[in-house]
Image 1: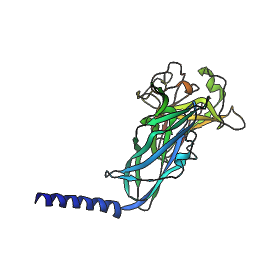
Image 2: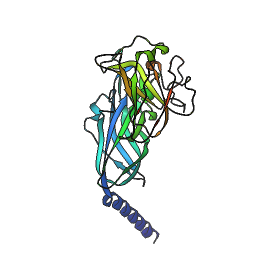
Image 3: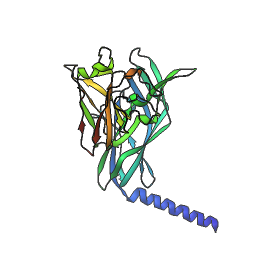
Image 4: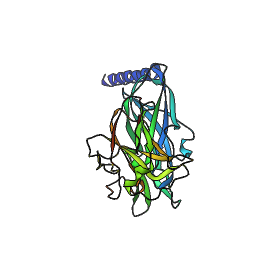
Length: 306
């Protein structure tokens, strides 16, 4: 009798899962990828083996990975022209709360800008992060997510007895609905002067080498004493954006973050990104006085540095 009861319960649970997965599938999701480049690197590749999204009811759903995502240099992928990472039709309608990305071991390779040296890149087998803010798929609806790999914030170089290597930390991954508001703006040459910058150099992608805008959650930090990148400090930057020069006039520079959840933020600039190792405090990284602003819904917020 006991065995029969257990079998009945198992069949009922399997039936519920079958019903959930086959009779409520009504929506579609596409996941796009952007990145913020790591200062001292010219290339980053990753081998992604699986991408999953979690429904609020608990089920994880595997998405179809784009065929060419593992062949791309992901160091320079802007949020206004992101790569298609994965997509899936016939998903259950409802709220989705987390995204999970799995990698090979090693996860990929990093290429040094100055020497062309090739380094192994490691990560946890799976990185899992919240989707913020709430993300809901309704009947017959297609929704887009934007995944940002913030290499400057959380791709760090390490050394052990066997090798130099890079490690991608969980904090590098951020997932938001693609239509959320973002922060952007212009930067004049005068804004860099108090930061003891070297002569400006620019990459083939028109990025100012070592130049970044950092964004902080506003926790009433002293605006003239903002911290550098530190993975274990809740007052450190939560996201970075590269500084891009105009193709015809490098004195005209701009930045744009990928979308951010609603909230109060502080933005600041630094030209010492190549010194800013996220695993600990870096005394020689100078950061400008911060500027406060708020992001609300899908409205974009402009903040210039003059």
